[in-house]
Length: 213
Image (cartoon, rainbow, N blue to C red; front, side):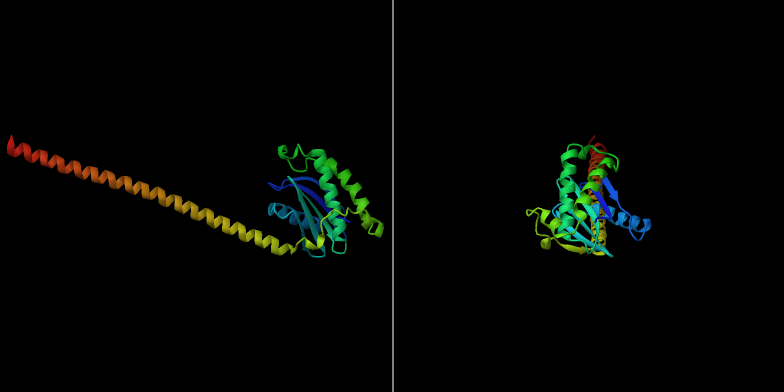
């Protein structure tokens, strides 16, 4: 079943609840995959409401429901249909309990007590038997239509987008500076013309006074 389950807020990736189970690779592996999960939360596309991402011998599955994203790290052999049914269950229950509080939370892991429900759901979906598969709602979307990506592609694509955003920001800054410099140059040019006009006028006044008075 799920080795790592996380629930995060979609708009900023703030982790709201978590549940971690031991894995053969020990704590070091879970730290690695926890960090990958955090990066995935930062790169969520709200329009992509369900996704599978492969990472080594595991797969991240996630669903987005309203303001939250529920994510689970599972062995590749674990049935995707069960994984998404588990995530649907967990996300729906979380929203039923905390939907009105999600936007106001300021610190991570605010809803640690939700781990008790996650553990209950894990036991429910851990059985891979035909009976467990039959319990999965027939209304669950066809998992074969859910995109499967590789963790490196997702992370690198996100980094490329960040680079493009940074360059666009730099160009915007340069454009703004150019406009400001152009305005300053126009002001200097205007004052130069005014000064030149006043100098000519002063010179003409001096000549008029000298010859005609």
